[in-house]
Each structure stands twice: as structure tokens, then as C-alpha cells.
Length: 90
Image (cartoon, rainbow, N blue to C red; front, side, top):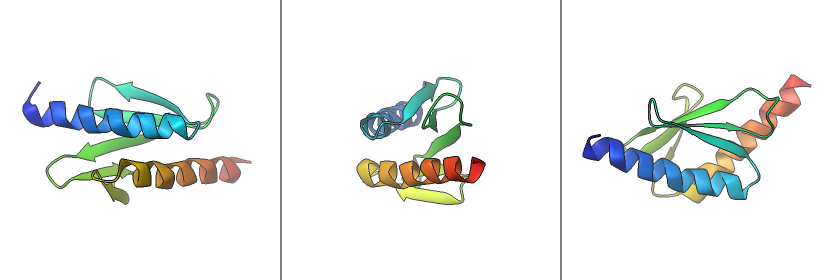
């Protein structure tokens, strides 16, 4: 694992803790540094990746981004998107 990959995993772990504190179901992918997030197990996953070079967490295929220096802020935005997805599915 490269230094860049190690840093990406570390930053995702910080984000993972923030998301879990907001009551979201979070899992880490070891195939690629990424998180799978959902409110409950029956919901589709929202995948969160990281661009270490540019310093952003990314989701919705890169259409949504938030700086890695603010994992709590990123978690709040992701939680809103996850909750919005549930209301759209109903």
C-alpha cells in the first residue's frame, strides 16, 4: 500500500466515525479506499471515495465533494443526501 493509499484510508476512517455518530450504517471497502453508506440495510448504498491529491471526499460519482479537512462537515452533507435518497424511494 502506498503512502497516498494509507492516507486515504486514514481519512476515510475519520469520516466513517463521523458518519456512524450520525446513525448511518457505514462499511469500508478494502478493494479501493471507499465507504459504503446507508441509513438502513434495505437501502441502496451511497459510495464515498477520496481524492487525496486534491483533498476531497467525493460521492454521487464526483458530483458532490467536500474537503477532507472538515470530515464532520462532509458527514453532515452526506447524511442529508442519504436521508434525501430514502424520501425519494418512498
